Image (cartoon, rainbow, N blue to C red; front, side):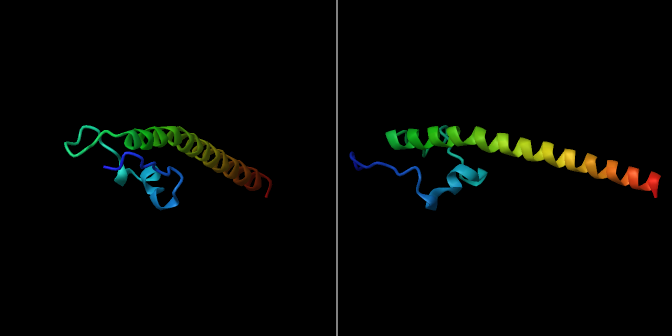
Length: 81
């Protein structure tokens, strides 16, 4: 163990840790080692998660509105055409 090791949370090589469920960190796993850097990694993942969730909710809402608008346009064209 290196006592002066600092993890770089912005390293793009490890971005899947924040984005993919395949790389979730499980503190209940027997192999889990609670360290200062592991705690930082968990906190960073938690900090990034709400932003991702909010953006996907907005995309879903926008998609629903797009579908409704398309149906409205079709109905108006059908009635006027």
